[in-house]
Amino acid sequence: MRSEAKRILVAEDEADIAQLIDLHLRDAGMNVVHKAAGDESLQLAMQESFDLLILDLRLPGLSGLEVCRRLRLAGKDLPILMLTAKSSELDRVLGLELGADDYVSKPFSPLELTARVKAILRRVSTQQRLSSNCNSERLSCGEFTIDSRTRTVARNGNKIELTAKEFELLHHFAKSPEQVFSRSDLLDEVWGYGHDGYEHTVNSHINRLRAKIEIDPASPQKILTVWGIGYKFTPE
Image (cartoon, rainbow, N blue to C red; front, side, top):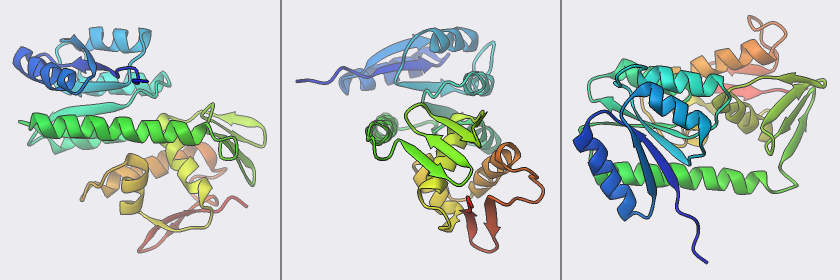
């Protein structure tokens, strides 16, 4: 039985680029919906169900960064692939820190973009299969209860609001308490790809996660820095 075609929202104001993306993704068996402005893209992403958002960061109206920020603030787990200018490292860093899943720099190869899209969709599918496993959907780690099915976290019964990427980071730590992870490990395993030079993205997410789960974020007791290596989670 053939699986249902993935539904992709493309937020891109350059018509030729949007048409190129549409052509290649449809050839790969996906359904594509296109919007040219940031506010329209945000509204559609909030109202309808998509499997992935391809988001140009230089959109008229709301910028792509603002679209990304508002989606994550609203708790939307929609995977996001950013399109950035080749020289715009700051945009890439900000996008990743706001919760984007990957990026492709313009000008890009349509084959590379299609491969990145497929990689994100495969990763999401794998995470969903793991979440449906009754043995792994609920983790109890010290004071924390982490439910991957509902994507909720509670400390001593009190719910903690986390962004999608903060949840994935904590869940990854909780599956291997006391194990030390380098920043590169976390980029590979939580973000799903390697980005040499983007380790500070991990640092930013760690700091925000600490602010939400630590009693005193300035003196963390749960997510510990292992100097010269990375981080580990100590739930007890």
